[in-house]
Length: 506
Image 1 (tube, rainbow, N blue to C red):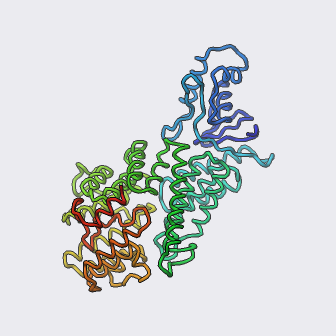
Image 2 (spheres, rainbow, N blue to C red):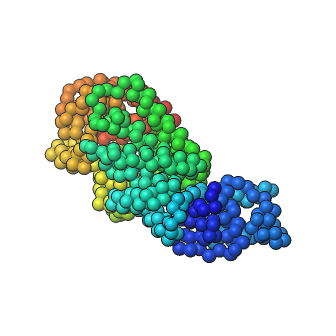
Image 3 (cartoon, rainbow, N blue to C red):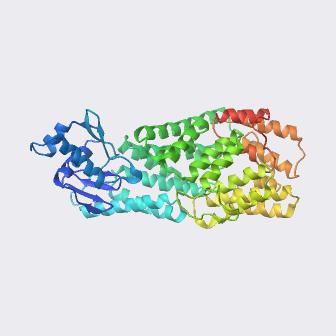
């Protein structure tokens, strides 16, 4: 590592050559000994230094006791807190001291580049990171612009490529349910995630970002081969193998991020979102241990419980995530558009209430979900669409055909490709999609809405066959609470489909 390098860790930027430390662009004052020790440790992340070696190099031969090292380490930890309480330096019993925070090397390629310019780029990186965490659509666009500027000025800064990859991937997420998703942004995200991993293969955030992008790519190719357009033929066995391999690569990348940075809640959340069954439950629980109250982690755990037919446990999980145990029925929804937002929780809670016949409770939950649509949250529009579909099903079951149609139209207004709402409106699912779980369910919805006359036993067999043939993963997890075809059933009902879903979510 060159002495001319700048070292970035958390919100800090360390100029080893000038012995200058800044936090978010503001200089941090440390005692000379502590700063010398920090430069030595941060320049050699992961290496364990014996206390005698630290005394020799940081104290320039001055005779002190090992207690001075312990005191210096304590002061560095106290004065340099890391986000989320992540560790910076750890003491290894009977071995010494180790710098454990992820370090990104920033090379000053051009001698004329001023430190002020570098500090400005670092400030932009901090601003971009904060914008991404909001999961607000407008903020994601601003974050992409900020990270593009940082990458242009500091092309060897792995964390800048990570930020840009995440911003581009989230821009794709904003459009994934549109008629023409922003696949170009997803391709840019892939490029920068790979570059971040190349620049720093021990950087957990780089691996986690790559895993997220790879998962998005595998899901896109499920209906859009080569990211070029809609599927024009049924998926064959080669496609299925390729998709499974893409998902496996994504899981492997997420697992590597946790191996490198085991206490980063974001890594556990992303693995939970990518994984399924017990792995999803385990990492959702770990996320909540590191960041209590994170709604998405409760939602992810609840999805596995729904697939297992444990509907009461799933409802309890959602209520904990929403803090609704003692809340009045008319309590206003939290419309905050940030990482702790309850987006999607009220919708799924409404489906659970609907499945057990509590229509009034379901309507309250659906109303709360719709109240979040204006929050600007990344997934608010998609969740609102799903909620309108559920409301359409509720109205249809009550015999209000006109009200149901209005609700289904509200759904497709937000997500034009919504397969179940389109089926309920009378659009038969394409023949080449009937082999997929969504295609088989759409056909069942089409018939349930009175547009077809296929026998119920034949429809059930088609859904079951699609579940059997689906690649490993969460396909069909919503079947127990699908509102138009009344799939809800006790976990011990003995049906083949329920048993298969439970096995798939083990």
